[in-house]
Length: 505
Image 1 (tube, rainbow, N blue to C red):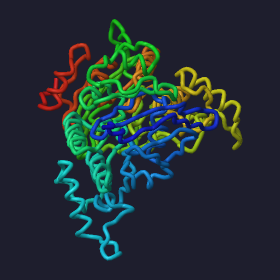
Image 2 (cartoon, rainbow, N blue to C red; image 1 turned 30 degrees about the vertical axis):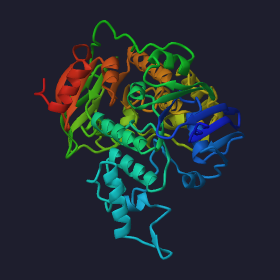
Image 3 (cartoon, rainbow, N blue to C red; image 1 turned 180 degrees about the vertical axis):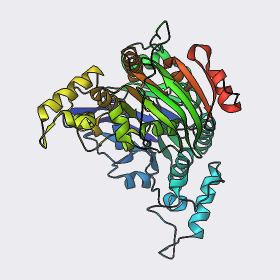
């Protein structure tokens, strides 16, 4: 008896864009009911491959078989009709529509040829949310009012509203806290138990052993390994395949002594009603201070308030002794503050512009004379800043949207290097960034601090905070519950503090 063919088989897939060969003969097969992990550095071809699988891109050459039969995925709708759903890292939900409307968008329930709204759509959505273990989400609630974790559940419900047999999950845990990640893995287990296949993309290698069955590794548009057992393949081997070299998980060395001198950033009694309580904080030149806490603890809100993107309800921010006008980003930038926000595509980047314009946008007065922009000077300055960070490709004229996530993040940092900022605010600086690029970013952040920059860092990954920061403030429910040198803390201690709370020290 012949063995069952794979649910999905992609063979010899190639895809080129102007000047870039994104996929170069990639093979991928996925069995029904398995979690197949797709790994690779930013720029390795993962995003292009899943866009081919979702019907968003057409391959130049290669074949796709679905349940043993050749298919052509001419559009996302064609892929969905076959049973292939994709949940992207940047969720494509409509915030001003309800949960039920988002779940059934494009295929609303019908009866006798007429679209059925109201009770039928809500009942169907409620059943899907219950299947996903989240019956508390109200189908009538606006999606824009939900948390990031709840919005992800809505995206999964939308996928399951079709007769889906394969779900692609792109960095599904990136914005989740540990409990939410556990729930995500439970959902994945339930789906695969029902025979649904999952293609799981993550930069968090520790997740692969927990959730994956097999692993395919991409590098420079090629599959350098396929079908590796997720549980037994050593992490060091996976990293070497992804990067072409061995990468140690070692953070840059801290200075032997703590930075001394007049604080460059001082925060006194800073607060925003309903988000975080009175915060006192100072950072010396050359010091990295980390904020550790769960999602919702006020971490990002603190950074955005210091930067002026949110207006404080109390307190003051000083840079080099001078008070900043509350709620003014312009004043913050002029004083020497730079922010790399968590949602870089939505909040930091001009996605239709070049790398050059994204790097120079906060320093345009340097290149503008009498209303004219010196394009050559602008390009030269952007090239120097991006080369300092080893941004790839080494061509600042390309559109920023063509870069991988890690290189887009480098472009944001290059913007503030060009501006000559004094204080760098980093919110999830390595979110969606691969192992090799993380190591580069860690080295860059430490080097900038060693050169006198003050850094305030937020990260959901406690090891990252402890590995990079000189000093750590632990947050719980909008208040600081503990402050200590990073050397005196470990991951378990920080997690105990953020979960249980502790008197401020």
